[in-house]
Image (tube, rainbow, N blue to C red; front, side, top):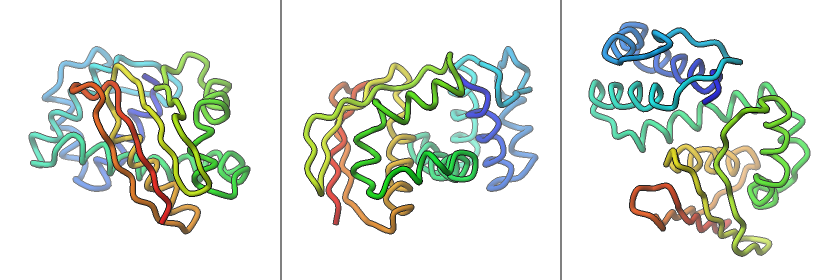
Length: 179
């Protein structure tokens, strides 16, 4: 997992819960990196799982809800660091339907060894989108948070339903209806 995901996560934890919480979740975890991350480094996903689990235990907030909040934070990183990527779209449905064939290609140019989820468009209309998410990491709530922020970015609203195709969350269907 790319280091930027870790550095931004710890920035969010510090912003929302304080530096003491950052120290607490790092100290509680058995991290090969010892909790030292660079944005361009690559780290084990198990480290993110430990950090999320310990943050959840210390705050009483579910991992899914933590991922949702984190994704909303991470969207601002994308917006500030890669504005051209977002500006090439005029509609949230269009942007979300191009995750696999455009956005992830651009991400791989910056981070060639990034392990990204896959998104398969099942059905697309002008105001709706059905797509399947596949990832061994089961971070679908991170994807949901990014989708929510995409609509906000375009000053639009939507109803986004997610249905687990596999109970472990490694395959999820998103049904998105623009309001």
